Image (tube, one colour):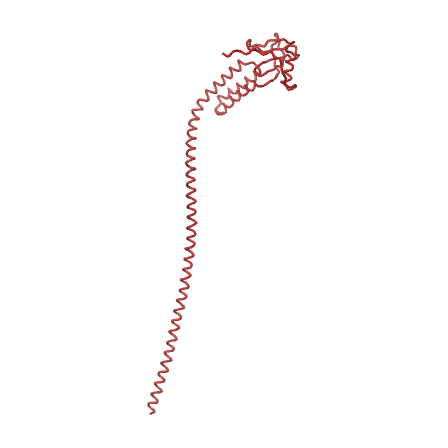
Length: 260
């Protein structure tokens, strides 16, 4: 009887120890499971962070890609515009090359033209009424001397010749007076010359006693009636000096000649 009770107690003790050991084992297993779960959670969080970072980087790359695409489109438009400008510049260069080639030809043609113009102007002055003759011939000689200078361009030479022609044209539209010395009756006399364009060239001695007119036919100064023209000539000299208002003047005007 005692033996059976002892065996029952022993069995109960073994069962209790087994249960306790099983509980301890189950606790260790649960801790391990929880630890593994925590590790998985931590790993999942780290993975999510990496995913979020990759997504953010991808978004940034996409934005950069869009920006670069816009820049590329802008550069394409800019390049097309540059190509048009370049084509236009090439046309301008070709035109300039052609113009430069033509300039050489024109320059060779202008130089003889300038010389012919100067020769014609010199003949014109020699045949014209001799008003301001020294001044006009001095200007002509000055321009002719520049023709042989290499430091003056053909364009500048041509401009100087045109300027001479312009001066000669201006003489025909002006009434002017200036002092000069003329041979009057075999004596050198101081006179006041009155130039009325190219219509008439008159002179009067400083004492107003002798009046003269230039005769193109004789190519000489001839005395005119002082009684008829003395006052008119004095009035004309005042008008030329701007000492009197413009008025009608009675002057000895040569008859027009028939063109030949």
